[in-house]
Length: 118
Image (cartoon, rainbow, N blue to C red; front, side):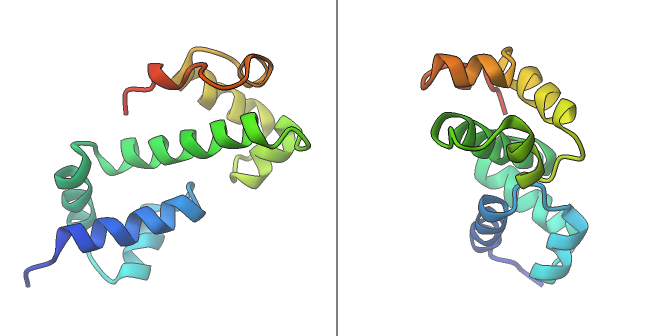
């Protein structure tokens, strides 16, 4: 069966935009396609693997919340994004941006984002 990879990617993007820590197995069930089909759709649309793209979406969400939701603590953001603990969230952000979430929040817009490579 031939799939419309762009359409699959668009649906995947919508899922990851609302729930960036979605598991591939859950998405395959929701979209009713095999994991390799989703992987191919992501690769064709972005050049990234599924995991890289999911991390990209998660980082986008993380940075948006850190910069624009000052009323939420880092722990609340971590929980909201599905991290098991605040230190896990901090490590994720630091690994992708080179800065701790606290510094990103203190420095405001324009920090760290450009270091993410996928």
